Amino acid sequence: DSRAIATMPYAAAKKRLLEEEEEEEEEEEGGAVLEEDEEEEERPEFEDVAEADRGNLRKPSEVWKAIEKRLGILGSFAERREGSKSRKEYVSELCFDLAEYYGYLEELVELFVRLFGPSECVEFLDASDAPRPVVIRANTLKTRRKDLLATLQKRGVRCEPLAEWSKVGVKVSSSEVPVGATPEYLAGHYMLQSAASLCPVIALDPKQGERVLDVSAAPGGKTTYCAQLMKNQGTIVANDLKKDRHKATVANLHRLGATNCVACVGDGRALPTFVSGFDRALLDAPCSGLGVISRDPSIKGQRTLKDISSTAHLQKQLVLAALDAVDHKKAGIV
Image 1 (cartoon, rainbow, N blue to C red):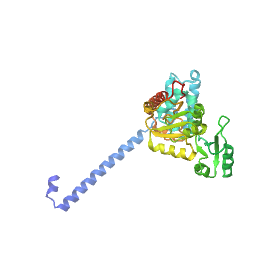
Image 2 (cartoon, rainbow, N blue to C red):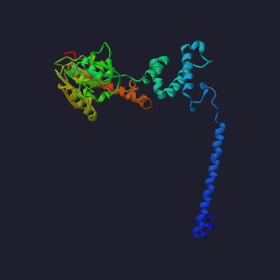
Image 3 (tube, one colour):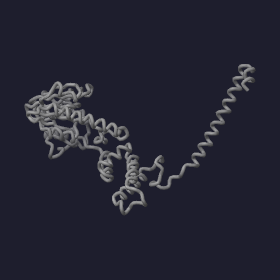
Image 4 (cartoon, rainbow, N blue to C red):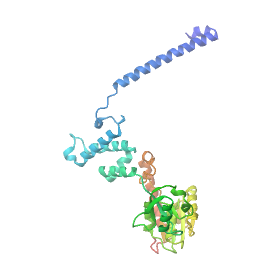
């Protein structure tokens, strides 16, 4: 065939080659269709969720039924186990179902089950998907919480005091205006800050006239709260590793009127080598993010056990650095 084509005129030879290529493509497509038909015939039909292949897609309601079934068995394992199936096998199947239902990496779910147990793990996963209320902190350097509540309510913000344990926290239920763009926000009368992040500063309890170190300060919520409790008396060194993130810290210091703060950029692990003797140190170390999944759901499918291990190692290093940075003679607090 190749010799015959070589003796043909150019146009005829080109036509002959194109025809042969089309015939070959048709044969390949026909074979592919046959293979696909054979594969479809071999695929088993979905009958029982508990016995479904892990590669099959299931409806959320079916997955949830499987979760409830396995939770019931694990809750009364001796009475409800099926045959000689081990507890480990049930837990493995439960982890797979939970990962599919909630959208997590399976290794993360396995970690949660080890930490909390099966039933409490489900409660944790449900709570992680629940939206958190918006919380703001009244800046007593410029206003009082009572006055702030009255002003925001006039602007159409439904808000109330956060809880008895906080004198400055405000919970926002709903708002007709963007909470992060009101005149009061721009004037520094409050800071958008989660309720949980208020607790470390309350525990640290910085006093007026003390030297305080914030090892990982950006974006400055805890730093400005410390300045607020210290009434701008004493000194706060606000450090962070990333210069770009620290720009927000400096902006918040100016907006909230925190004048007793010094911002610096550096590795927190190296701080004790050039600055130390602090009365108190606050460390909001970089974390795995597993506690703020409601704010960033992408963590479900991105964070791995390797990431968690490396983050934990970094946290230990930063804790040691914070301990070295405080004044040991005065029993400094971290």
